[in-house]
Length: 181
Image (cartoon, rainbow, N blue to C red):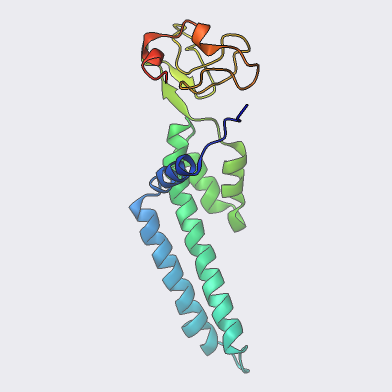
C-alpha cells in the first residue's frame, strides 16, 4: 500500500506560491540592506581603523554573510506581513515584534506561534481553520475526510491511508465526486 506523500512537483508548486507572498517593497528593502552592509564593510569600517584590517578573504566573507543575513531578514519581515492576515493574526503587532526584537527573535517567535491558515466556508462565509473538515456553523463539508476515522484524505483517494476504509462507500458531496479518479 503506497503512502500519501506529496510528490516533487507539488512541493515545488507550494514553495513557489509561498515565495510569491514576499511583497516587492520587501525585495527592495532586502537589496537596500545588502548594499548598505557592503558600504559599511568596504567604506565605513576601513576608514575607522587605526591599525591594519583583517585579510581580504575574511573581509569578503563577513561582508557577504552579513549582507545576506540582513537581506534575508527583510524578506522574512515582508513574508510575515502577507502571511499573518491569512492566518487571522494582527499584522501590526507581528511587524512591531519582528522589527523591535533583536537578532531575528521576533521572526522566530512568529513561526513558532503562528496560527493555521483560515479560509471562508463556501456555504455561509464563516471563517474556518484549515484542519477542520466541516464548517462549525452550518456543517458544510469543506475538506475531504474518511467516514470511518475522520482523518484528512485527498479527494482523489479511493481508500483511507490511515484505516483502509473504502472511501467510495462514503456518500461524498457532489462537489467531491467530480474529483474521483
